[in-house]
Length: 172
Ligand SMILES: [Zn+2]
Image (cartoon, rainbow, N blue to C red; front, side):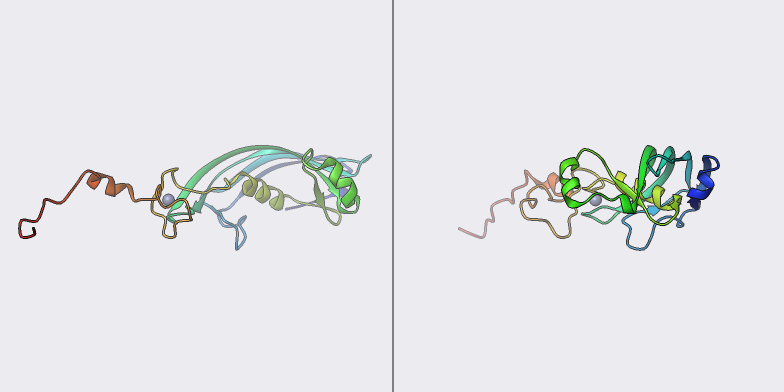
């Protein structure tokens, strides 16, 4: 859904969206939509700074594969956002960016407006954890990373931890 500045200059744009499963995630995204994305909010254009402001909330359930065992993890989302987009030609130079690095999240729009679906998709991507494991102790790592071998033992082996085979009477 594309919101045009020319429309925003007349009035704010209030949105109440329900985006069907599969309509938001792009190929290559780490998540899939399990439920519709429901989003409400308002888009405002600040003439003085040419900023597009988006305020609202979204809810849905996404799923993504566990980094270790590849099983699907379901994650209910309930996000609120308050975002400001600058026109791309206002993008600061490298020098200016160094000064403000880490202080502000700068986002930009191209052309004459903003695609709301992109905004929502980005919020979902930003909310996904960096380390995507189904549980902290998930031990079914098919390819254990170095240093993780000890903790990645399948917990089902714990039952055998104290087991020692009886001495073989035929030996000795
Ligand atoms: Zn797992």
